[in-house]
Length: 162
Image 1 (cartoon, rainbow, N blue to C red):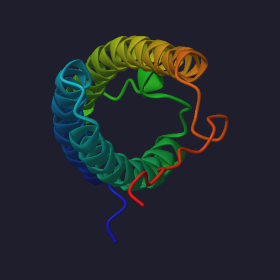
Image 2: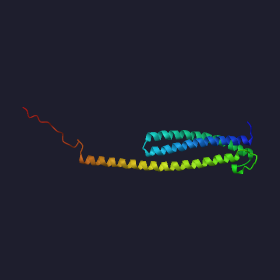
Image 3: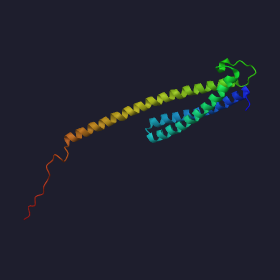
Image 4: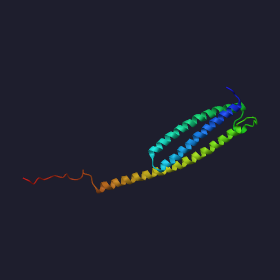
């Protein structure tokens, strides 16, 4: 395998682009989740959550690949971060930095959307809890005003024809 730093940079750029695409898909799924929470579609919400988990697994694989190439690049150049790279002849470093910046911005947008979804889900859960309490109270009232048949004396038919 060629150990040219430019090869590592190109592979890092490719991995970053894959990750950015996955994160865009994840943002779309997060927005769809928000709509599903608003419409009380719990079945649809479950499907969206599983689709998101698939994207998260993809992103984890890409991150592993990125980590391998990034550690090789750092070792080859003898640096600890991309900011320390000052080789003017190394193509792609600025592009890689830009890709990483875009990924960070998208992650921030996803995080914000996730926080909003969490709030909506908590509110929905509180509403459901309140509705359940009302139903239980209604049952108690109903049982007080309409005693069950256990406490009622049995009815008998008297045959008057003889």
